Image 1: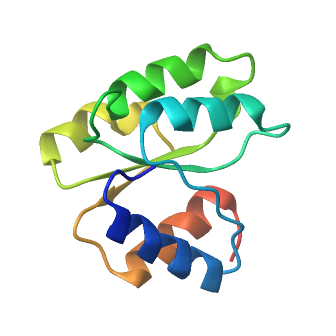
Image 2: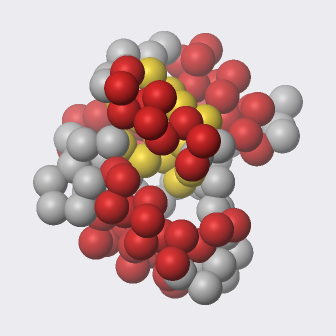
Length: 114
């Protein structure tokens, strides 16, 4: 989930090139609806700061879904304090700004691909 449209579009392109099927959400409410509708828990890239439902609130509500604890979440943030606070609650932290290699390495570690 990423509220910045340009970043979201770039991530879709990069993730698609890496072989991932991508579904996007521009805010936490939309992301929670999509997660609830997924038949199998999938990887979520979560922006820390979003309008409305931000990353921490989203994560708490995601974990309340019937299979919510099964979704691996990678937190994307430029806020070092945020990443330290959330590190134990997520599968990985991607520090902004990040490069393609950092993204690929974290995805491979979290998904076991590679």
